[in-house]
Length: 175
Image (cartoon, rainbow, N blue to C red):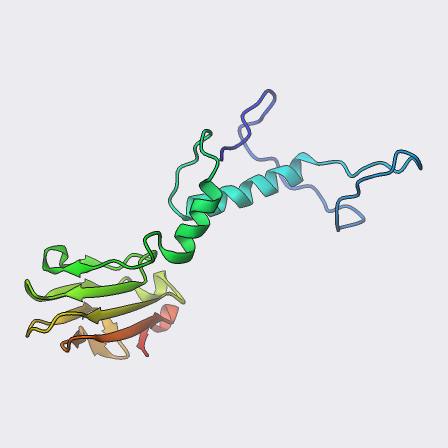
């Protein structure tokens, strides 16, 4: 995917035009009756282009003129976080900052305690993660932040997963 770069392309997106009298669907036209087909306006084409570019950019993928699968790849990445939306954390990764594309976070504490740093809830409204401990040892998973008034809560039992959800400016909750 790439932005238009042909002859007469402009550097800045033009201001949107005023909607026409009829807002709807493309008309294929009928040459036998003289009904013209719907014209493609540059404003409409720019809007479609920017909608596609926005999806690709949201997935962190750089536009590449030679790649024909970027929109598909972006949708897959945004939908399931690329590799299934799972990232395994070990002591060497501590402290680990949550990533919005990795929603399931199994934590291996066999090498030591692990700290998982929560982003500011106001920065990720509506986001949720499933965080849990997958090893049988005495080390803890500490969630660095405040969840429902509890500062730096921990997970200590093997196979215990907790779902956390951001309520935006209201903070974090467990479920």
